Image (cartoon, rainbow, N blue to C red):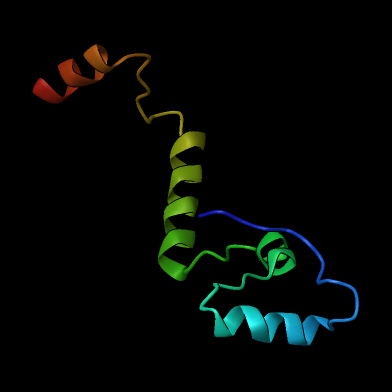
Amino acid sequence: MNAILTSPPQGISIENALNILRSLNFNILNVEELNTKKDIPNQETKEAMAEAEKLIKDKETPFYDNVDDFLAFLKN
């Protein structure tokens, strides 16, 4: 997607410029909103993150430095 970041020509209000672009079928994105919008995790994601934290802190959880060691563990 190509983006054009500019202000409207002198003498045209931002509202009129947006209406013109919409009538020409341009997709209008509010860049400020995209930059400030934060992704809020849902409940399932929060639970998965908490479980991952517990696994990291658990001394009994096995960790592997490479895929071969992990695959060897899975085969046993």
